Amino acid sequence: MKREQWDRLKTLFTGALEQPADERQAWLRQQAGGDEMLLREAAALLQAHETADGFLDAPATIDLADFAGVEERGGGTRIGSYEIECEIGRGGMGIVYCARDVRLGRRVALKALSPVHEANVRLRERLRREARAAATIAHPSVATIYALEEIDGHLFIASEFVEGHTLRTEIERGPLDPRRAVAIAIDIARALCAAHEVGVVHRDLKPENVLIATGGAVKVVDFGIAQVESLNTRLTRPGDAVGTPAYMPPEQLLGGEADARADIYALGVVLSEMLTGQHPLAPGRRAMPASASEIAWRCMQMDPKDRYQTAREVLEALERERQHPHYLRAQASVADASARWWWEFHQSAVAIVYAVMVWPTWIARTVIGGREGNAVFVAVLAAAIVAVTLRLHLWFTSRFYPAELAWARGRAMGWVLGSDALFATALVVGGGFVGDVRPGLAVLEIAVGIAAASAFALVEPATTRAAFRTSGGL
Image (cartoon, rainbow, N blue to C red):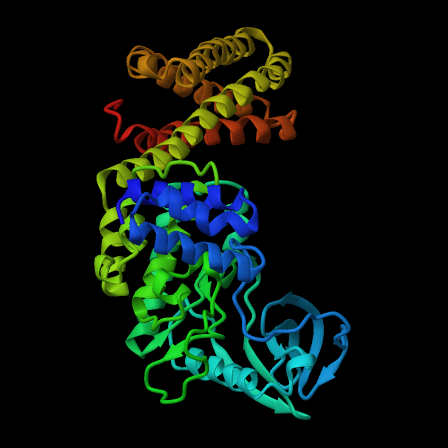
């Protein structure tokens, strides 16, 4: 499906939602203008929306009752060797708790069926299958399954507890920086590669099922409706649409067989959301930035044959995208900006220190006395005036006239280095003169003099190289 068709599909879908419920199908047929494929896809999306109680958010589930009145497991509740700390989420199948495994002394995510569904044989088997499916995948971007427990007739999955937030939380703040969006998509694609290679299809990939750990690691979770190719049992009835409609390809929406390419479609939707901050079919959706947009569009093709055929292909495309010159230039500019900030900080910090040291040197002049005292003070004062004036001038030029900085540095740096050398020398000499009378003052002047010499001989050359290595400013 081309972008123009996507736009038409979005217009049809959002337009149909504005019509009375009993007139939507007729309105769709009229607006489709004989385009049977477009009509079929729009009708499928509309049906999913009407049956899922909210297209963009609600998971399509099977025979799930309301959670009202369900027995609560509060903090401190003991379940086998697990002690509940708090509830961290509810989904179509049940509840997820943060718990502590008292045997191993570690936090876990403890997933259980809601008590109202404990007797549902199909859901119990689905929970078992989630544990088996996720346990077959060994990858840093897939949350680790620790155990499948049956305690007092209740089933629980104990898995890795990820301290952090969901990808949905980041998307709700607005579009992600394209570099970050691509980096997260790469981690998701790696997780899908690992899953698909052992025959596991997630079938419910969405931002809520992608966790961003506090340290930045990306974890794909919730394989509750995963399809495992090696299993002969079928846990969904023919025609069932399981998953979250907003992230389901047409073949899955219509209850057909969904293979690994369904996950690829969902990854395209997630990537599009990261780049725009909105679902591809959301009304008033923003245009995708050029970066990575072609990858997202290809993932979201309506016909599975037109998508990437494997998660490995998506991963390779994303890796190539990350190596594109515009990404490398952007990364370099961030590094250069950070290095430039340190160079500017060095200029301002040195200017402040030089200005402050004029007063202790005035005191040293009175202690030393005579021409020697005056000479030390005049040397420090002159060096401070020149260094402070020129360094603040360079700081100002860097902040407000960066194009002229190389020219300004070329003219000023000789004077700056000369004043640095004079300043350091005069302080050390002055400290030597007052050592017997004012040892504290002597220590201050000698220490600052040595620090100043070290700064202009060692520190400033390093910050200068880092700040100007790519700009031709050296």
